[in-house]
Length: 429
Image 1 (tube, one colour):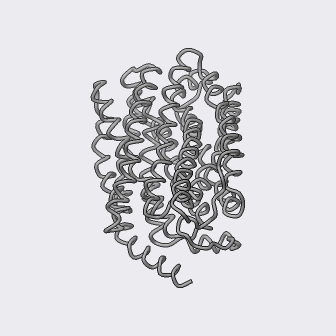
Image 2: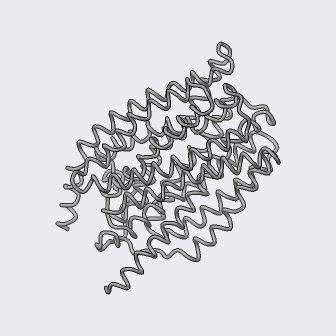
């Protein structure tokens, strides 16, 4: 392969990465838009915190994580770009439909539809990115892709806050859902399906093994520790993401526009910076010691405890903004490096499946249980503490983060040996 062709391939790989990052932006716009407008929905539909928690947490997550598994198996066998395009149309369309509902149960069903669509987003994208980028650059590439989370949250909070303040929550959902349908055509026509194994330059045979056989290969001690550690960490991140707006509204009396603008800026700047720093730092440190791919997320988890405590129990507008920015930066460090760890331990024809199982665990614990548990604890404490109940309900996140830190510590000790063993097995084939 001549130098011109290599240069072209590298440029095209970056182009695909940015297109797929855009898909992830829409993923999180549609996933989190309900958070910034939930106080408006609560008043309009007369809902409890427990019902809100189900909308933003468990009801969405159970379908998202469950259907992610068969869709990932399909992506490992068929055209991954087509799976992503179809999924984007579905979840964006259901977001738009959410703006037309007239009661809680219709909204719940629409959110379930969003969850079903989003199940086909990330696992195939992770697999495509891993084929376009070699292992030594993969954590950085996956971190850039993961920054779509925070761009999406930024657009959702900012756009959602502005539109909801002027036009209400129904118009907000329509405005956020329709553009994703149009973007799906860009993905379909301009992203090329890569050859599987291209990142490692190895030949890959079709994955015809059963679900159980793939699962037995995947569930190693390293995978289990990393996935459970990520889930415990995501419990904190999703709980804060879902309940920060009510906390700021009820305790500090911020309006919807203030909340949307603050969370948009802090999530945009802090999340993108945390993702990119996490990926680049671990790719650099990991050249000498592979355990850094898990140690960096573990250290970030320890540091996270301090700004989170300040957010829950602190006060003062400027202080809260700084602490939210710092918390978002630290909580976003982990995803790119951890995905790099997991996708380095499986063959290319198992990557969508691996990503789906990982997100099944992460999102069941984090997205499913986090906002839901906090919501029901808040309801339980409300008779005694009133608006302060949300503040005390959020203290459960400290326990979950401590669990995450210990699980990451154990995984960091195992990963270098697990990687060496896997690479040796590939060489022998």
